[in-house]
Length: 88
Image (cartoon, rainbow, N blue to C red; front, side, top):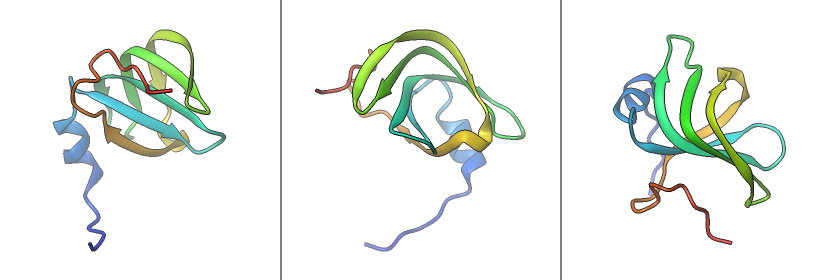
C-alpha cells in the first residue's frame, strides 16, 4: 500500500461537523471532538472536546482552539464514536 499525500485544506473542510482525533506534536496528547471550523492558517476549532493523555481521558473541555503549529496529525474518528469515548 503506497502512501498518497492529500492536500489538507479540502480534507479538513470535508470533516467539518464530523468527529475528529487530533494528535499534538509533544507528548501523547490527543483531542477528540466535533470539528467546528478551520481558518486559512489551519487553526482548528473543536466543540464537545475531550482530552486524552497516554490514551486515558483527562476530562471534557468543551470548546477548544488548537493552533496549527501544534498539530502532528488529524483523523476522522471511527464511526460510532460520536460521543468521542476512547477504548481503554
